[in-house]
Length: 68
Image 1 (cartoon, rainbow, N blue to C red):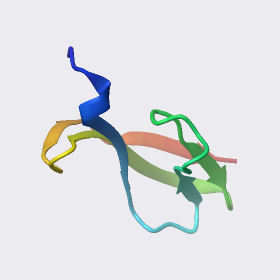
Image 2: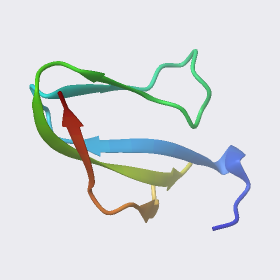
Image 3: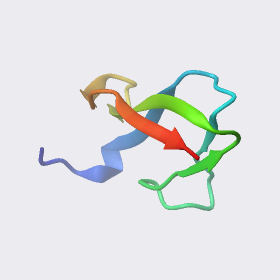
């Protein structure tokens, strides 16, 4: 996938979970995020690339996450 990144954003799709929390903050770079484990268990999340018009350009398959 080739693109001019000024027109795109990274978004995370995840269930509201007691297992982990996901955070994208303004002070982080545009393509970075944090995952914080809250308690042991399994969950999934997806990475999504949307353009500035909020159109979904890419969605990853569910990515498994295990917190121990």
